[in-house]
Amino acid sequence: MDTAQIGQLLESTVTEAVDLARRLGADQAEAGISHEEGFSVTVRMGELESVERQRDRGLSVTVYRGGRKGSASTVDYSPDAVGQTVRKAMSIAEFTAEDEFAGLAEAERMAGDLPDLDLYRPWEIDIAEAEKLALRAEDAARGADERITNSEGATVSTGGGVRAYANSHGFCAGFPASSHTLSCSVVAAGDGSLERDYWYTTARVPDELEQPESVGETAASRSIRRLGARQLSTRTVPVVFPADLARGLFAHLVSAITGTSQYRRASFLLDAAGERIFPDFMEIREDPFIPRAMASAAYDSEGVATQRRTLVENGVLGGYVLSSYSARRLGLQTTGNAGGVRNLIVTPNAGPLESLLAECPQAFLVGELLGQGVNTVTGDYSRGAAGFWVEDGAIVHPVHEVTLAGNLKDIFMNIRKAGSDVDTRSGIRSGSVLVEGFTVAGQ
Image (cartoon, rainbow, N blue to C red; front, top):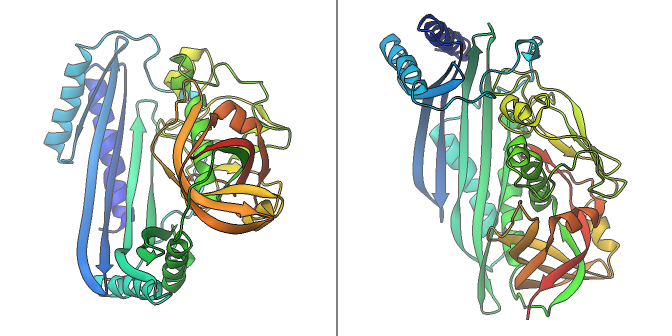
């Protein structure tokens, strides 16, 4: 079956599940379903190492009855299995506690206009062709420099599928989406050490992927530049996060302003809406409607219409990231963010990474972050890192075995530049970021 036929089947299945739940006595019901297929090919040291095929499917049914919630799931879409799943959800609801905040999002918030966001572009490629592309990336990496002595492999993966959602408000919709990735990781040897690094490209559309040779050469150069790393003495200096790592800072922001963190009183940004949490120049927007973007969607996982919004303006936090449940707990309205943010965009106020470094007489450029030392309840930030010591805008030598320490409240307020080299490979789109007054703990 093609994606249109699969989509029709999935929408029919979730509609039947919801209708059955209502007939069995549910006050409200919702169902989500997915069908995804793809494969990945990995080569290592010039030889095919593995071929993996993926085929994932699942149906989840949630019912609400008398303030009680029950959920059940299955990977079998047959009518009998769907019926059993609905009945199991109804049974579970009999044993859960009443929750006055449980239930579907409000009917008037359901998405009506469903624009085509061009999220599905299948890659007409077979295993042999994928292997050739992976070999081109790895060959480029291994041939880039004699110091590249080993490889962790290059992988080409492609996949796509259809998701659908329905609820007892009468909402039912689905859409197909695809994703394609090419990655490479190699090991460099020199100066008595071994260093590894990687690079990858990912896109909805195959033609928008970087060339394999570019991916391999970038992976090689990133590995080589880490050779000869030294330690630093502890100091307080500007720290520059390149675009692919800077987005992690804003992921911590999102975590702190989700409705769940707010109503549980477990956030370093508790009740911070309306407060200035960044410098005046900072603007962060959400745009769910960017064609072909990795997090675009016309509705969230509850069927609520997504919306363009400015989350941070002039450094001031405008609101939270809410589902219908967390919004009710807080006495607010859902923001259409059940399932997460949709293309969070950090507006640049400076040029690319090179221009940020050029402004620093001394700085630490982050190359890799290690560990999970971030406490979003207190904001305490302490992560192992490797990177590069920078003087007068130029890299002097690589650095290892340091710790970046601070508090996210201070880190956010000490951001001085947001770069124009925006990384579009995820749902958070940020360029490089320059933060002043960071503690780099070393020897």
